[in-house]
Amino acid sequence: MRFFLLSALLLLVPAVAWSKTVVVDGLEVNQKWWDQLRELVLTQGAFDLNCPKDQLTVTLMAVTYKAPNSVGLRGCAKQGRYVRIPGTLTWSLNAQSADPSPAEPSSPPTEQPPAPQP
Image (tube, one colour):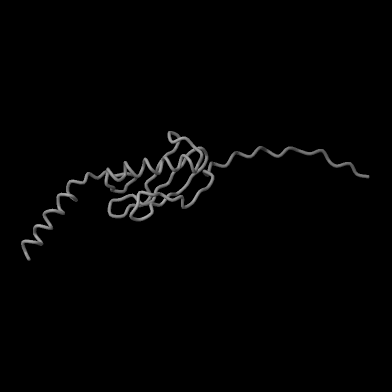
């Protein structure tokens, strides 16, 4: 029994130890998963946000067991948040809105001529 447990442990350790990880937006993620899932969400986001992929920026928002599971996309004055459906390579648009932009400076009020009095 002890031999079996040791053998199983030795088989699992290399898979975890050899998985290359990268830090994206302050979160550690498996590089292979990040590269694959990032490309999938960019393709889907380009369609959903009606914006070319090269104009989208991706922000990693959440990771579970070094797998990306929530990202933000921003581009073409729009933004959306995507979540990965667990156990799949499918991303779902969770929220979408117009990209918040800084308030435009207001112009000074113009003086209106006084209304004629009867």
